[in-house]
Length: 152
Ligand SMILES: [Zn+2]
Image (cartoon, rainbow, N blue to C red; front, side, top):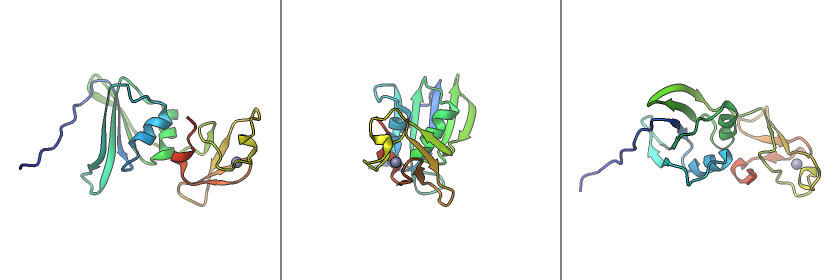
């Protein structure tokens, strides 16, 4: 049996997110608040030309903003964002993890004041001593598994 590769159709207008950490495509959709009933292609554990695997998302008719791209970096740092208009890449950039995250994540400490129905927004700062770790402003707890802390 010959090996067939599925060819993913190119999109005319929308966003292609490449180099997503393998298995993280659905976390990316969740952190962006993009519903899976939209028209999109999702590649999971696709073989990368550079070796290893990656996920790829092609979302039609959505142009990701810089703010959204930084939110995406919470679950998959260094993913590449390509904005496509009329079949051409008009903007290409890397998703950079934000220094400060407000409201998007919830603290893993149930006793944290941000989990007490107080009128305050959760707030986390990117730790300076580690590549990808956030610290709660209120209780100083580390948030390591960011994908699990995304507010729905
Ligand atoms: Zn906290």
